[in-house]
Amino acid sequence: MPPEASSDLIPLYLKRNPRSQEAFEKAKRILPGGSTRDVIFYPPYPLYVKKGKGCRIWDLDGHEILDFLNNYMSLILGHAHPKIVEAVKAQVEDGTAYSSPTEYESRLGAAVQERMPSIRSIRFTNSGSEATTLALLAAKGFTKRKKVAKFEGAHHGTNEATMVSTTPSLKDAGNPEEPKPIPDGPHIPNYILENTVVLPFNNSAASERLIQKHRGELAAVMVEPILGSNGIIPAEQDFISLLREVTESNGIPLIFDEVVTGFRVSRGGAQEHYGVAPDLTALGKNLGGGLPAGAFGGREDIMAQFDPARAFRIPHSGSFNANPVSLRAGLALLDELTPSLYEKLDELGAYAARGLRRIFDEESVAVQVTRAASLFCVHFTSEDVVDYRSAMSEDSARKFNFFLGLLLNDVMLAPRGLGCISAPMSRREVETLLQKTVATIRYLKER
Image (cartoon, rainbow, N blue to C red; front, side, top):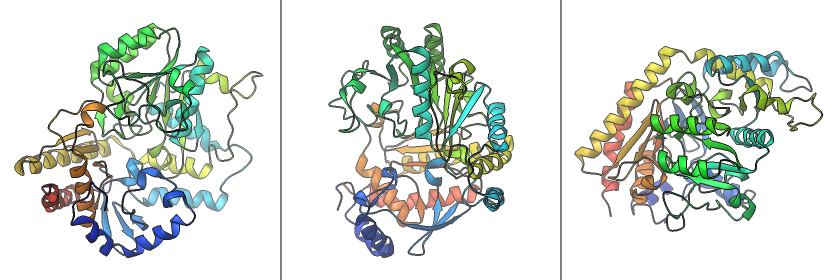
């Protein structure tokens, strides 16, 4: 039994999910740890899903589960949306990939640019991790500098240059005003640490001081305007505006990692929400309408380095870049993302956050609920959550019991307490989340 779990929860989970356990045991014979994707693993083993429709999924053991996770926030329209299915079927019948471009590449690029005017030039990839990697390569090539500034607790995908201080131990992280660069694993060489400046999120004075200190060496400052994996922690307006001012005045490209926030927190992502235009943007998750897709883009002078007609350029290829199936799904998605839908999602996100706060207050369980539009996260702490270190003050045992208790009651959030609203949901689904939260309280009070 993992140390985080209530004594009651694991036996109930094992009894309830024998087919998932069987599938996991088979997976372990061929996959390291039985998994290809770390974020979806949790002890004792993850649920194996058979199908999804709307805001629900069905697992191998036949349970119907209300899905407040949406493949980690990447399915804003929910599962198997009819318009996405129609677009995918139409393209599959015409072929799934060619050794030539299609018109859908420029069409989706134009649709993205209309929503995010800072993206004057764009290239497509297959994931958000690729997008952040290539955005950094663009900044390094353009500035001829090596160092990168990123924020403590920020996750930018499987990207060696930023796999630093994503989840550092606080005993190793050093001064909160000048965090130490801590490697995310044994694969990170010293030269990466030496060329990474770790900044404290939502700390304007310290971040400005560190950027000024390294201004002649910084190729880029990369930021998630809303910390995603750290628990949906929004940047303060003054903080994000300060980042734009100090980078612009020092000729340092500002990169927004909008893999989580792009087309989620507003029609034009976090940059529309904050009214701040970055030099480069990385996109993923919702961009492909549920299919693998990513993109990076921004200033034309920076992106010109990828022009294949240039003799000395940054090479960028990939057999499935700008795959027409993903592109058509992305176009269908953006057509559905209307202002009225964003209003509905924002209202339901606020309703969920208010309801969760009320329930925990009534039960005298200390929580903070952070939120950005349709995204929310429950933190089991009495301390205001404004950055990585304040998020780390939470009670991890209660957090895991909350997740597993909800799952046993047919509601899925992330193990880290993260959830989101999808288009098929209404107040009825949010009320179900709140009712099931009440049912989990007894597990949270077991200590």
